[in-house]
Length: 303
Ligand SMILES: Cc1cc2nc3c(=O)[nH]c(=O)nc-3n(C[C@H](O)[C@H](O)[C@H](O)COP(=O)(O)OP(=O)(O)OC[C@H]3O[C@@H](n4cnc5c(N)ncnc54)[C@H](O)[C@@H]3O)c2cc1C
Image (cartoon, rainbow, N blue to C red; front, side, top):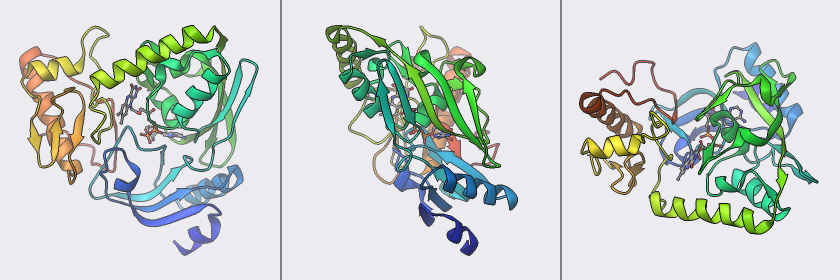
């Protein structure tokens, strides 16, 4: 740790509870939680971690993450508070991966640029959005993407064109050992009335359908088909309101699992197991996780 502390120019928090960095408010301590100051700092940190084979994980703002109660024995690197440059020139946007998606959406709308407005209200950073191919109300972040820069574990930078990466529903094929540092987008100039209309539809839909007053990580499972929602299946399996400790399957939206205060990762895992089992029994459908998990053993979902 002493050597790592000498290297990091940005912020290093030792034994930092991940509960402070996830929208669930759940997760044990990370051995080192690091916000690099800039690309050269990031490069040196990755090089150091690689040289000493230290387990290294990348996170954004933790809005799609379930972290184990035991925490993470390794480096957790986030660019969320430092890589925040955003430049708009005509209909082109350059953004670093720590830019919050909401900020990107609002700034693009101010320039009458269309393509991102349906993602108003999706929490998280641009980095997380690209990994997840975040989307809402018909739009997806990959739709107007031109290219992405990543840094490898050896500290060098690679660039991918949008076509080099396969994007599908809440999925991308970025390599797990590369961290996204920035991206370029091309949007379309459209009349502001049209953009505002799209934004309002998305914003209203979100307020009506989602339990936004409570801590969650959004949808826990992917929808098995575009016209078959995981939330519908969980609801029809009679599971709305099911509790484990202080975790609950939302009565408002059954694909949102809520932390009412002191829920543990283990409580959410139990709810995941219950929902999967019941939906499998009743509909013969296997639900795939949308949320990402960190720090769990591989067989955690085997009940
Ligand atoms: C109330 C609520 C509503 C939501 N609604 C939606 C919705 O409508 N649509 C939707 O798509 N999602 C939704 N989500 C989920 C979440 O907001 C998105 O998945 C978001 O894009 C995650 O961004 P993040 O920065 O928080 O990523 P994190 O949760 O921190 O990480 C997500 C994944 O990305 C990886 N990652 C993050 N940053 C980087 C990086 N720079 N380089 C490499 N890997 C990285 C992590 O390792 C992890 O695998 C919702 C969540 C909440 C809490």
